[in-house]
Length: 484
Image (cartoon, rainbow, N blue to C red; front, side):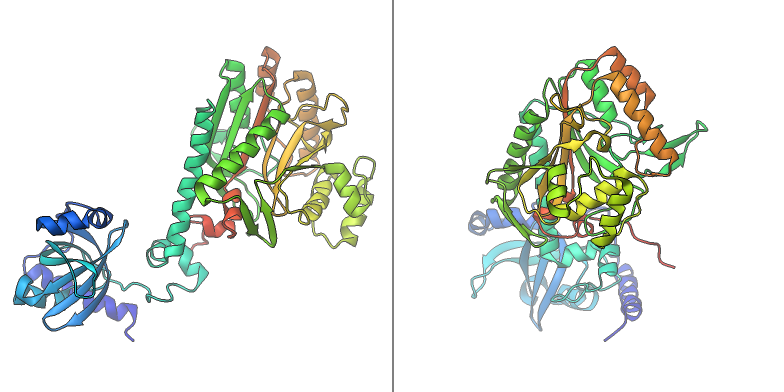
């Protein structure tokens, strides 16, 4: 089998021969009257009319010899068979095709339509025009690219040769469209908020720091404009949402990436109970519109979004599974339990240790469920529970042993918010890289007044769980280490 370098040398020679014949191997445009999916949709009328049309695409296969060739053409919408006959195309043109055209080349064919003796819809080509000459061969048809690193680096070939991968990304497009359509139907307004921030807010995560022309440090956002969208609540917009990229300067895993797409909405005059009702409706709508089902199996769990969503008390669940009451336990108690359970963690504060303990517990729950009853020290932006100030009005969606969406009744008490930011500042000083940066201008906004608000967000991890794939697999172009 020839190497890619040998194949490249042979194809460069073909390219030179094409140029010598006066054929431009990379023209700006070629004839294309319709897509191949349009051809399939209107084939009977095209065959009956006998009209000549032009189609264009990439050659995926060539078979036959002598006076007739069969070509499989693909244009991103469908595959279609092109038949090249010596007595129709001409002996010289057919020989040029045989000698100079390869699988992987982009080409335009013109011709009429007919059904072969085997019953396959086809075009009988009367002429062809090269659209782009490929210098390297495509992956082997049946096995594609096997090495994951190579697949991610050459995602264009992975998608081209693997219909399952292609279909997954088409589903992902439908996933975000269904999300957007649902929110628009509910009266939410799409907004754009900064991706570069002086202080990051809205999530417990380490940010990426950078520098700019104004000579001060800025950070890539870790949430989709949470503190900005809440400013819009103060501005008088009752419902806003944003779908955009966020960045976390943390490790990668099958469920975590450093760059991904998030959605967040904010709803004035709503609380977290109203938010839970809306989120449940939204998840069910996405599931039915995108996947035509509500039952999923993922990461060893099975759940049905159409079932009743139970409510799980955060503190009670941890105590039930581990025997630890995180409200009264010391950091030493929690650390000892983590050691006993063989749970690895790098947290130094009680907040991070409790979070590690919860992550151990949640893996045992399939859902669908809402997790509620979070201690106030775990969430600096949520309103305190009116009945018990030791808790906050926060909820998380729990599916397949993972948190796949978070929301709360937003804290709009400026005095309480200032105190909680001061606590986060102390955590930062103590070395907690995931603690939230205080935003004092946000506190000033609250002093001007913000209505009661429910905020909620989920990331593309939800999609990866619904298709039961590692999140890296569901990104078109995941971050790759440069080749040495």
